[in-house]
Image (cartoon, rainbow, N blue to C red; front, side, top):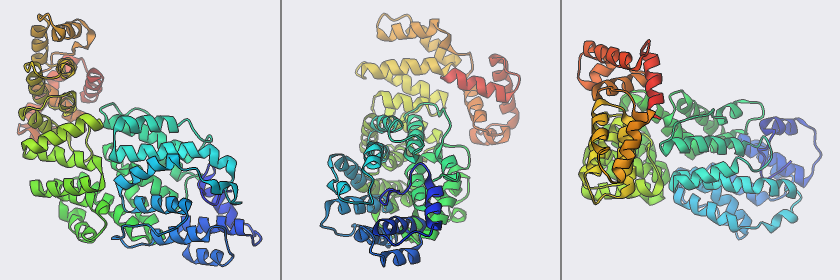
Length: 513
């Protein structure tokens, strides 16, 4: 039993068992049961156990006050004890989504050695020392994924997954973060996510632990085609209501509105106007996503600029990248383009959150047209799923002798993965060159990765079909007739040797890797 970290291998099962036992009055047991009351939002029970003089009562009261604080709160409770300050800060920064402050805290905690563990009877030193590095790794992975460099976040998540005890919930969080971060960096989403199943299990985390953990990864759930985002928002709302936490309720409502918007509902139907009114006077970190949603819904540059500004203020890098990507796609100004290019190169984002692939492709084209050159731009264009944009961005890099060498090579490789008639013709021309680009083009031409002879339009149609769009929906997207779409799909199936559109989509997905 651990009165500081109550979510362990046995999760809720242990907490519920402890609360059902007729335990004697003891400061250590009172601390443990008081912590469980906080985890479940049982504020009446917490008051009863505070009357039993539990160990570290000041910590319990401080955490309670943070959970129940109003949405405009900015500072954690004051404490002269260093270990209490660290405890209060992490809760405070999570509840107000102060990403930069959370990131600094995650780095500072690495140098913090809590002498208190040797004097406190409610902290088992063995468990603390086994789980400390796991917690540190997860905190760093979360901090870097939201406000830093994705490569660092992935490395921290991969390391954390191997630390601590077998069955620790932190390992599940690290595992899922690693998969989702790799996808954000441009990789395929391979492997099963564990966190949702863990929370649904009898040994899942407590309500408070579930809320904290889920809302670390919820932005990445926008990548998923299942109901994970909507499920998380609903579970988060239930927990927030149980805790009576205004800030937790606002965050859950934010992602509920996000899920509705992604389902294609209008801003009014999704509840965006109410969310904006509710978040108007909230802490800056809680306003980032609502303002970003407003910019996405309105397509007004000034709304997206407001979202980018407040995201930069709180250090929310993923929201900055998303807002800037939309801005460059809609209104590619030189300063905006330079700032987005720098962030893409430094942070490693290739699939910005809440940015459709078509918008990402437009942004890559805008960056390229503004004179920006880099591997990140080529990769952003390639992941956009629009063959004509990929070709144009690649050729701008290939034809620019001043472009970085690695970016020009990436452009040739992007043409090789494209596999269209036009891209193959370009590769055959490039293969006649005697420089590095020629060597790369010859390798691609002579390998099996050359692809098929799909036209750009066939490629675009089958890519949209791969994402589940019907012929009519594809026709509306491309301003073509359903008959024309059916003809392009039939031609693509014939070239790929596929029996139906599902098989053609699967073969196309394999061809892109």
